[in-house]
Amino acid sequence: MSESKQIYRESSPEQAAVRATDIFKTIVRESVAQRQVCHLALSGGTTPRSMYHHLADHALGDNVPWSRVEVYFGDERDVPQDDVESNFGMAQRVLLDHAPIDWSRVHAMRADAEDIEAASREYEATLRHLVPAGPDGVPQLDLVMLGMGGDGHVASLFPHTDILGESHRLVAACHVPVLGRNRMTFTFPLINAARNILLLVTGDDKAEVVERVFKHSDQNLPAARVNPRHGTLHVVLDVGAARLV
Ligand code: 6PG
Image 1 (cartoon, rainbow, N blue to C red):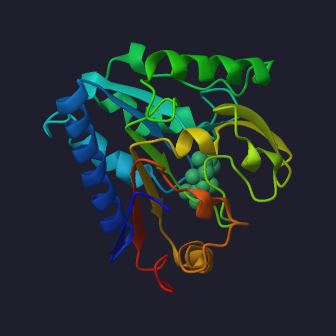
Image 2 (image 1 turned 135 degrees about the vertical axis):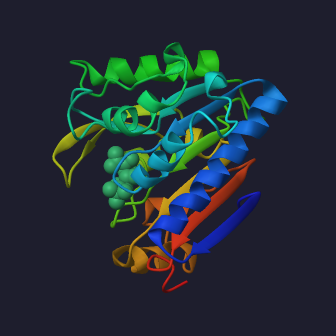
Image 3 (image 1 turned 120 degrees about the vertical axis):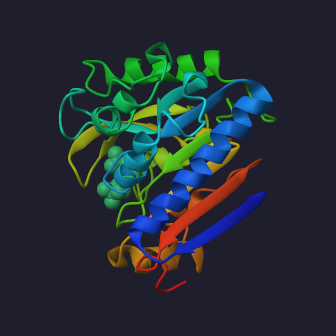
């Protein structure tokens, strides 16, 4: 059971992005007010783009303490940073280049490294070094943003892959059979240790998966295993994605 779960149903994808933006800002402000820093992980894919646009549009005037934010990534594809498929590249173009962040606090995953296994161990070491541990000894991020694929995957945790059962590693390299590609990803022990998880899902085409995750808690779907042990899960859906719940 999550310590707490909030589900928001918004009237359009645009409104869902506005809601997610508000939640993001509140968490950043509160984290910095309480602990002088906010450790957050961005998500990739297409869904967070309009939220990143909102954040970028108001980045200079909205009272978000960007210079105190440590930016991580929940997963990354095996492409160079300037590739259109790169999650880092997307976040940089849409958000990070427009916000007064401290670039020394941006931690890109190098899933394009020749030795992706070593690169993922290094990323995990960075997290262990920079992010204070929570009650169970695992680094406790203030916010982990997630999207959900049409097959119920989150980050790069895909259905029926071994990495779903990982209990030790916090960041790992994985092979995604449906894509035939390698990725680097946070694992569930790290995701579920977060203070806040923001899961943003939009689109009618995801309604049935949303129903299986939130009505039936179908554990075959990785999204159903998102369950912060000592934190809050904020689920933001648009009317299409929320159609069956
Ligand atoms: C990625 C992800 C992934 C994504 C979902 C949803 O790198 O692809 O981080 O988990 O959030 O696949 O993607 P869409 O928003 O494109 O539907």
